[in-house]
Length: 531
Image: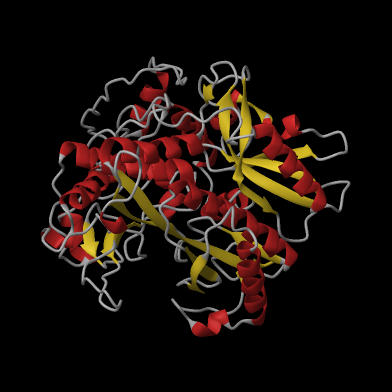
């Protein structure tokens, strides 16, 4: 996982990359040159260039083995005492693997449990990030040898909501998100969460920027055991509705579920940012949550994982089914995980400059963007075709890439354009100190099957690459959707046309082979319990 190696434009090139000699991706690797892909004669999807490297040698992110500062043992004792006072029976250490699957191990808080048991975390086999979504089959040249420790980031400590209890106990269950740590090298291991932390620190140390982001996560609820309508794998909750349909939000079972969901997320402030907006989406039984903007992308990615877990637990509690898959049927509108981006300037010590003013925009810049803002957006746009392998990483993801479904299918950007994959938005005209400028840009080609840490790290790396190269931002799209195919490059319409990092390429090869002959109904049934 040393970085994004090259562009993949056909399945044959994907196979060739996987078979080519390359390094094992340890944290002791040095940065290698990125090789551009040859022009493919086998596909109409032309990918511009290689994604910038996402380093795993951790130049900046160097946590200690114990995440506490000061008196580590004393603070650990206080933590253990607090967990026992709250009647917590188990503490889960949670990670999200490269393929987007959430995995955990629990420490049982029995009477003989010690502070050291909490601080040393839990062991995970090193190949955990080489396992596909359809089963624990080791992919590529990874092996069952080696072990990492998942160390808890105790600033994320929370209590799980809902009715589920751990086997053999009715006590509460707590959780923390963690970072994989290599006990042999004494450094961070092969860990998407650590990779995102590294990219955020790199933005500050090398570019003087603190990254800000937000997300909107879409999901579907369905009625368990009900007869599915024609063309759907199950019966969505409520009645058929349209985008922002108020009647859909007034469905009694939905009102009860949403009230419980918002209360449960509010009760997990360490693991989830506040929810700003909730509304019905364009598909039957589909809804969206918008998470409050912040300047901590790692916390935002944590929030995505918390929301995924909380949605599933509460759906069980309310007797409902949950599905986060991007596409459920050929005719239904897909579900996405849209991310929004901006930044402000900081000094060498990480202190905000100019009162934390939004440095993405400028009243004197073209399109209302600052020089760095335009370059950051240009970097993301330049690498957008390749980015889709990380932001839309399943075969089901690319079923969502259909013109006219607001998925963003052509490589372009626009002002408040729902069909553009990059949308400059949030024009500020109503606030007391309104500037009339946009305040962020949205990346639409992203969904909830991704690993949010890896996807966000890749977006940041692409944006920083644009600043580093001084990439110019082209003009915004001005033609209708029907005319875009003739003027703009299509984004990939299948997983084999995108580019991915080494473990990722092995996992995705296996998934492509496993799912290639399935219908959409078979695919949804196979993946619905995972996503």
